[in-house]
Structures are given as structure tokens and as C-alpha cells.
Amino acid sequence: MRLTESTVAIRPRSPWEAIDLGVLLAGRHRGVLMSSWAIVTLPFFCVLSALLWDYPTAAILLFWWLKPAFERLPLLILSQSLFGATPTLRQALKAWPATLKEQLLPSLLWRRLSLSRSFQLPVQQLEHLAGTERALRISLLSQKDLRAAQLLTIVGAHLEYALWIGLLVLLYALIPQQIQIDWHWMSLLDVENQWLWIDHLTNLFYALALILWEPVYVACGFTLYLNRRTVLEAWDIELIFRRLRQRLIGTAYAVLMGVRLMLSAAPEPVWADQQSYSCPLPESAPAQSAPSVAAPDTPRLSRQPLTSEAARSQIHNVLQQPPFRNPRTEKGWRFPEKQKGQSAARDTRDQSWLMTW
Image 1 (tube, rainbow, N blue to C red):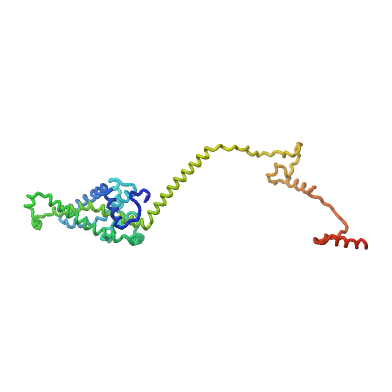
Image 2: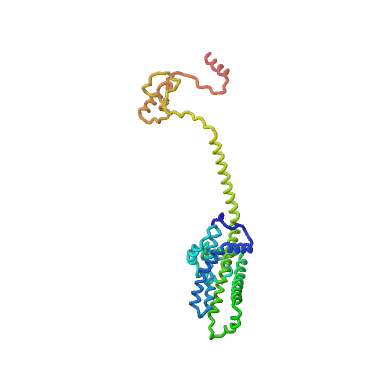
């Protein structure tokens, strides 16, 4: 998720404020949400009614049971639209079958009657969690806002039936008066009349009511999920640090550019002559012919390792000659060295008696 590209303000909200945000989010993208839901569900409802024409109750019950499969399409659209990449109708319809591959049977079997279905759907569809990881994640998210998600499902079911009945009343209000006189509700109980088309028409109005409500229901559950993650993962604080970093980077870039301009305007320094790596003779030495044998302290040899046998023999010969070596031989008696600390007067007295003797 690219939090910096979010189309809504990322901040902690109360559960009811998060539900209001879901209603606004569904209203913002109502065109693609309602049209995609109608394109997917209405043809399926017509095929189901044709196959179960003699069993309209079974047809509408089966259609109602398969709602979790259809709810993945609005969540796909909303999750991409929230971060600035709203898919087109064609892209959404093309990507919807891929969402049915993950945990569809559990959603239609033991998870079907869960009151927090819209709150848990993003965990398996967006985070791709299953098994123990999914259970731990839902347990963490459900520590708060779970009651709001359950009440959302209960209120949503009542709104579905209210819209359904409202559409039926609207249909009855549009029937001309002369037809109402000849049509009595008691005639529907007559088995011989076979009023099955009325049942299927009633079921069709339920499918139309879902077009209005189901995208809103999925959007509210999605915003509850986002609000819970915002609190747990501190998305709002992360966004503050990211914006601060971008601001500091921009300021540092401006400072560096200013320093560069100042340095470019300064006069260039005078470069000194490059160091010569030649080996000239010392200036103090008088001009004379080069010796046949180079001394060890010659500048040419000062940075050169002496490894040859000739160089070693020359160095040995030089060290054996003065002033490095002055051998001498002394014979005769002499007094031992006087220890330090003796006075000069005592030394003179000791020597005088010996001379007198």
C-alpha cells in the first residue's frame, strides 16, 4: 500500500466515523461499483431463474447465498481506488475471476453466516492470509471495532429488505387503476393460475436492491478494516515522518545547490608546480665528476631497496672503514672506572699515598 498516494486522510477514527467514510468512498466511485455489480449479478440471476423457474424461492435463496463471491468485486475496485489507481470497468471485470481462487468455498460454507464478513474479507483477499495466520490476524483486528462490523451487517440486512419492499411498493404504485380492479392478491393463491412470473419479478427487485446497497456495505467494512490497521500500525505517524523526510531532503538539496553556486563564483586557486620525481644532485655539493660507485645515501638509492649481492658487499666494506670502524689495541694496567658519587678530593688523597709509597 502506497500511503502517500491515499485519496483519503489517513488518521485514527471512531468506528462510526469509519463507516461514514465508507459511505462517502462508495459514493465517490458509485459509477464503476454499481455498473460492475449489475453486469456480474443480473445475468447470473436471470440464468438462475431460468434454470429454477418452477422453484423461485430456491432461486432467490441460492442467489442470496452466493453474495460473498460477488462482494469481492467491489473490494477489488475500492482497494485500488483508495491509493490513486482507480480501475476501469473492463479492468475490474477482467481481474474479478482471479479473486475467486482464494478461499471461496470457506466463504460460502462455514463463514457465510458470519456477522463480521465485510470486516474479515480484506484479510483473505488483500493480505492473502489463510489458516492459522488468518485466524491470528482476525483475532488481533477484532479486539476493537468488531461490534461495529457486526451491527453493520445487521443494519445492512434490514436496509436490503427495506429497499426490496420499497421497490415492490413502487411497482404497485405504477400499475394503472383499471388493472388494479381486475387484479386481486387473493388470485395469487389460486394454484391453477400459476403466477410464477410474479415471484421471479419479486426476486428481480431484490437483485436490483443489492445493486444499491452491496457496494456501500463492502466499502464500510473495508474502511473499518483500514481504520483498525491505522491504529495498530500507526500509519498516521508514518505519514508524518515521510513528509518530514521529504521536506528535509528538499531543504538539504536547496542548501547544497546554494553552496555549489557560492563555490563556483569564488576565484580559482593558483596551482603549485607539480612535484618532480627526478633525482637531482644536492645543491650544496660542489660540481665534480660522478663517482664510479654510488654511496648508500645517494638520492637515487634513498627510495630503492638494496637486494643485489654487489650492493650488500659495498655496504659491508663501507661499514668496515673509518669513521664507522676504528679498531685499536691498548695494553697495560689501569685502575677500574670510578663509581659515580665519589668526591674528587677523596680520589686525589687515595692516589697520593700510593705515589708516596
